[in-house]
Length: 435
Image 1 (tube, rainbow, N blue to C red):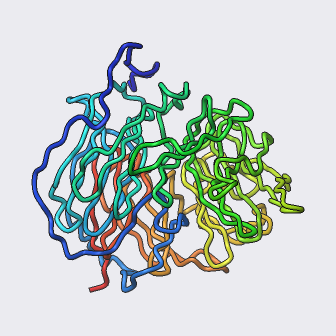
Image 2 (cartoon, rainbow, N blue to C red):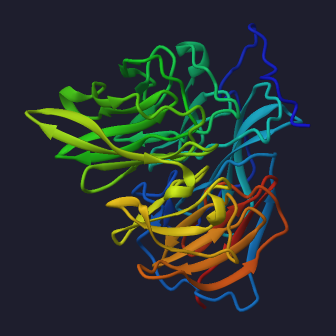
């Protein structure tokens, strides 16, 4: 039913990245907040600015607007009153970057390019990266597109699959692109493990070697500063690796390990303040924790422990959240009696479960985030819960059915009190301001 069996492209397919543009309306929104990329401004899935959000729904989900989308799990970004979403249009056969008004959902413009994609439990899965100057996207078959944010004009495009011999993951590209200091940072797999490209010009700045011919995963790159040195940490298919981000170390392998080797990796690394790196994956893989050491100017990665999903915190799709000294996440379906429960663990030993939501509160594979000091958790059937991030026990503040959907797996986004959610076919905007 998913038409599985690879993409529909022939070797001679010509893909003109960013070729088409259509302007519908201009926007002079006074909104100024942002959720500019995967996991938000600081890559931790925590909205630190803003307050006054609801703790109770009062039997009213307050849907501000909704739009129909192509089948997929791509999440939105928000920047100064505009919503950016990479969608796949099956009728046009195109990756489409769509820009909407956050206030009313009106589509402002779109830029697209034709590419043949067969449905494989959805198509688009990634979240655009937005800065004041640029928009960066990566499509299902790893076509990278960089635009001017203000105008939507094309800066450059890059076919990662063609240039690096990248093996596209089975459910298409899930890696969300990263813009850091004006550079596009992409984990390519193939002939390089990671690259940096100048957003303004499209010039290749560096290529990091691929030490073990590791493959692209569904995971995303996480910037991390440890021992005063900035690096990009990536969980590939084949291992975990950190690439230097600045100065003489830019593009250099700082540390790596092939002890973490899973065939399907969706969650991103969680890099903790004490030098621990928590890794998890689905399909029975479980989790692994490394301690990163720095001595005599050299990094090393030491595996501390690993375990199966029923023995501690593990996640299949979403990346756990580190908040107030604790680590939170939703267990996968193969976690035994605690399957799909929301749990809190001690990050000093993620096998130590502090509390679990219990068998009457299971959450599927849906996303979660913290805003205004509260967890917002979306079950994959469209039920939204508000949970207190307690260090002692599970505290459900309220719960409501927002929409009748399925496979609501895309990460959440929030700005100016508007929460964006989606299922496989629709995106919804909720007003969660406490008014």
